Image 1: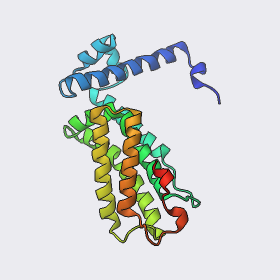
Image 2: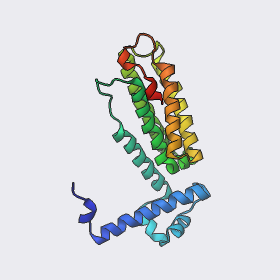
Image 3: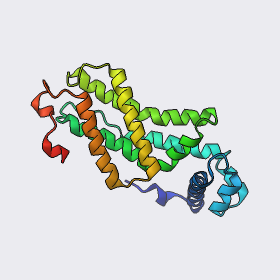
Image 4: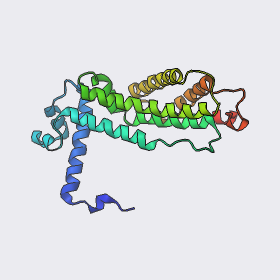
Length: 219
C-alpha cells in the first residue's frame, strides 16, 4: 500500500501538522478551562500559532469538537464486524464487543469527557453526543438479536435487555473516561462485565455445548 503522506507537498504536510496542533491545543484547553470558558485565543496561544490561523481551518471551537466526535463515531462503525455463522463462543463474542466499546471510550476519552460537559449547550453538540452514544447501543442490539434468533438467550424483552445492559456499559465507559484507567485495568473490566452479560442474558440450560463458556475462557 502506498503511503499517501509521501506524495503530499510540503505545504500540504504543513497544513496537516497545523490542524493537528490546533486540535490538540483545543482538547487540552477544553479539559483544563472547560469548553464554555475556552476562547479561540486560548487555543491558539496554547498551539503557539497566530489567532487568524484558526479560522483557516475551523469556523468555531464547536466545529473542532464536532469533527473529533464524528471521527470517533466513524471508527466505531468501521470496527464492527457481524458475527460469523461459525461463531462458537457466546462469551468470546460478547467480550470482543465490550473490547470495542470500552477501548473506544478509552481512546477518545478526551472527546467524550468534553461532550459529557457541553452536549446540552446547543443542538449540534447534542446531536454528535447522541450519535456517539447510540452507535455502541445499535451494535449490542444487533448481537443480542443474533443470539435470540438462535434461541440462545433467556426469554426476556429484547429492548429492555439491551437498554438495561447498555446502561451498564455506558456507566462503566464513563468510569473509564473519568478515572483515566490504563489498558490492563480496562481488560479486567471487560472480563468482569463479559461474565455479567453472559450470566444475565444467555441461557445456561438448553444451549448447545459448543456455545457454552469454558472455565479457561474466564481465566
